Length: 235
Image (cartoon, rainbow, N blue to C red; front, side, top):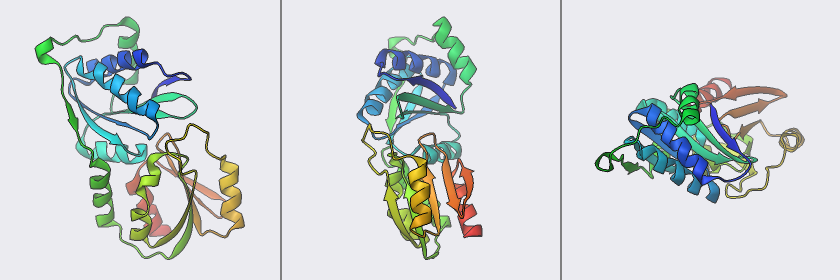
């Protein structure tokens, strides 16, 4: 669920948000981001706030949101994800958003003693480990032509491993994950999908949802596991 949005980059707000997240979490929170520099620095500010409460963060760095949700679900941990889409946004899962907002409004943060400040555990291989687990189950030879709209998100990092494992010939649009320019609109994706005769299309939205498009029909998935299970059974 989206917890925070701002048109401007405000690290002070993100640090305060981190303090509220850490106060609610009472343990370890997985922190991730997209490919923009603002997201990298914004996540750092948020993490400073989280650890100031005595809570711990697992920093997975750069990772697609849809993959991070699956990764965190397996770990049984909440997430806080900083990304840019027409402004700076923070997505959380596994945490009570209303409680975070109440603590933020009342400034009733936990303030850890200096000796009890939380730690940050770095896990830079999280995406590789998640993808390895995913592809252990899904090894297909579909032989299909697919259009992928990465929407300038880290979803670009799934390829070519994912397409090779599924036997797909993939063309990718909106693949500039460090760009602040808006991606080409959905209409461009749908027009190209139909005009160039692709078997189906995948559109990776910044909010962690993947759209599956085929013959004018659209399905939405918030998990890579359920997406690939659907593809295995229906393509």
